[in-house]
Image (tube, rainbow, N blue to C red; front, side, top):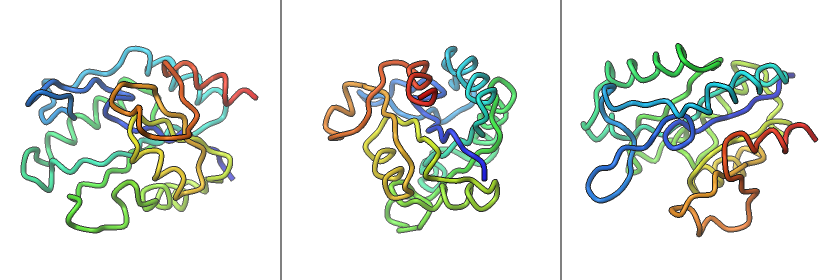
Length: 171
């Protein structure tokens, strides 16, 4: 069985975009910017024997704010610039009540089936309460990037920077 480092995309691997008074997922590839430290961290987690799997909700596709080719360009940038083994997206909206949209564990289960992943010996790195809930629902330990917008996520292991995950996985 394999171990995985499940990584949320927006706010973890790439920068959020300022829009409508807040920070959100980019909708066009021209505004997609990889967070520099994610390049080194994905190399290091891979060297430590973890699969790097992106698990991300992308509802702007269902909402008509982003099309498939733009999402594919962003995915290509992730794969080209980071050490990523696979990418799993939920492109549904909340109203669709699908099994893959976080906080449901569907994307974790798809990845586990494809890559023979031991979920109990894997980690989720996220930045929202949905990431925490999804990890819990999949029996994966979550490390939450501590941000002002996730202060209400409750009792969870918090890290200040992406590189802090190394303190947890090297135990």
